[in-house]
Image (cartoon, rainbow, N blue to C red):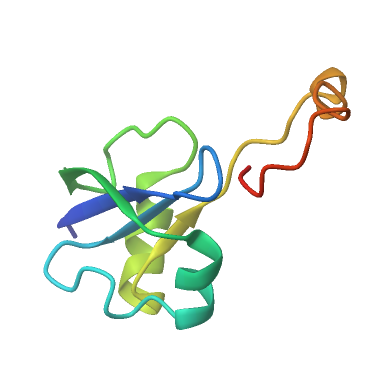
Length: 96
């Protein structure tokens, strides 16, 4: 199975991405997820096959989730312990 996918990045959370079927766009993404994700920013479109190498997830899993749920949500990678407190004294900006 192969599919042309659109990839969007979150305007609210660094390194969070949504993969969707280009033909359906965001139609099957639940409203609650859209609200949490923020305004989607289109990054690129790509032909996705099960064999394609992606950096953080297997392409077959992305294709399966798009087929079943209408989207695949790629969460940010976990932060190293030393980074967790890096900005603890920074004023809250509401972003990130």
